[in-house]
Image (cartoon, helix red, strand yellow):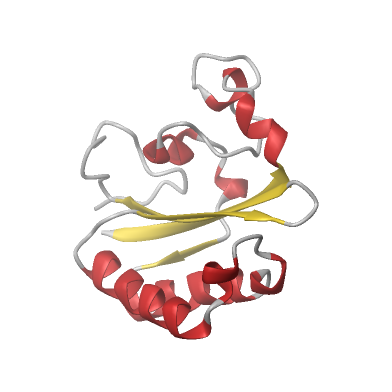
Length: 138
């Protein structure tokens, strides 16, 4: 089992267009917007994968770096709290170690949205029929 990392930073208005976020939509595979179901990231091209880890601490460290790069722009003051953020990252490590997906999403200034995801693969717990986008096997 391993985890693939995905990020998306874009207009919060794009999240309201659920068509391209569904696998049946013709734009789904080319659209970098967050899918409606987290396991559907694995249906996107392998080029969308921003990293792959079998080590929970390495995956959590990547997640942490992605989040902290934008924390100053978080709309909600509570999301910018460093103690709260450190606790959340600790929980990321625990969840990855258990083979769970980790999904983070934050509204940013300028009507933007940041999504940072670690998706279980090899196989996915809820969607074992979806193959690894990188061609890896369990």
